Image (cartoon, rainbow, N blue to C red; front, top):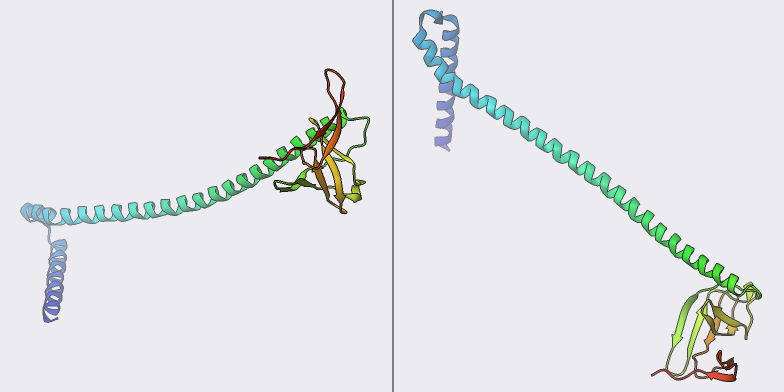
Length: 199
């Protein structure tokens, strides 16, 4: 601790001496003492250059930190825009899916225009080795009743076995307990199509 105090006192003494020399040199005509002027310049110039370099360095660091802050703000803004774009993309995917569903409904209505159809889609499945049933999202509130056929653009799917206000259970034609009268397209012979157990 004594050493630190001693060093501090020496620094203060040196600073006072330098200040006195500077005051004296500013009051003396240096034009007549070229050697002193040159020596003074050689002493002062490195210090001045160092201070200028240090100032520029600190200013550069300030600009660097400002750039970092600007980049952070820009990054946050881009994250917000990215989130908005992701939400818009999800909404677009939903709209595309709904559009495809509506096109399918429209095609089916045109194909079976002699029938009154109610559009629906599957919301649940119950699959086992002995039964294969599906639940669709329409029920008695939409006029759906038991034993009504369920069709797609590809043909017959099955028939309604039970309904609630908003859902219906469908027994597909591939179920082992289902039999459907059919005809062979080439010979027009009548047959009974029966579901089989899945392996």
